[in-house]
Length: 313
Image (cartoon, rainbow, N blue to C red; front, side, top):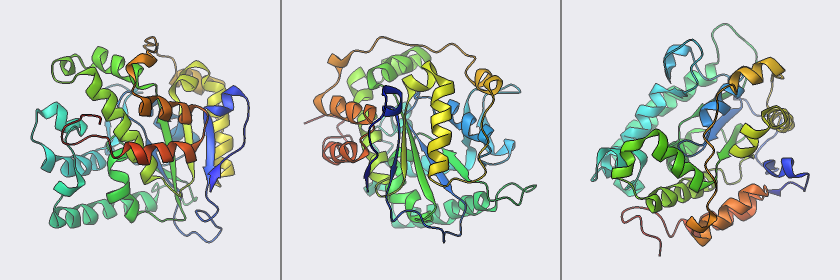
């Protein structure tokens, strides 16, 4: 496989990547979309977009949601959250908020027994998603999202997916802007996380996500493009997903897009000087839509981050 060809500056932020061996016409399962992204990167917005397009994610009671008729967050399945936290807990030797984010997570901390329990419960979740909505017999795709999935995809979730039906959508945001959003919306982390720790965790999540998506069709979307020009970004996303043979997708009306993006977004000023060389190179590769280069950088980055010391070499 390899990155797709060039395009205008908007296309660079949303680029499909296809491995010829990943898809064929003989797949039996529904298209399985893994929506991946770090905390406060906009995955809740993108989940709403996909759900409005007709992608299946579960019944409303399956989701962890904010209050209200049309909640902006979080559109994450409760069973998926619980499964991911179950895998994080054995590494929990720091404050709650640090292990909760995966600060000290290590796959080696997950015992074979816990892994088998995860496989049993996660396979049930996937079977429920594969079954699709009760009132529909169409071959709609399904998606699930939860930030910790970035770290856990390769070792735990991907072996349970259908290799010819799985697809990754990675939503990324400038890591410095992520840290500022986190400090603004989650003030208590100021006392427990240094800025450098969040930046390294961003690096780790994206390196792990790219590793987990290797040889799968992967779509990259920049948070900045999504919130600055949502109509254009969503139209391109629809085109890319249709090209990846995701079935039964609806085009969103102008009114629907406006309703999803009606909120004002916090937009801190970028500070590239806060990034280390790997973070800067990884962000650049994502921005130009070069999945192959980003994956190569991510492979290198994996040797630098994160557990247990969270210190870059």
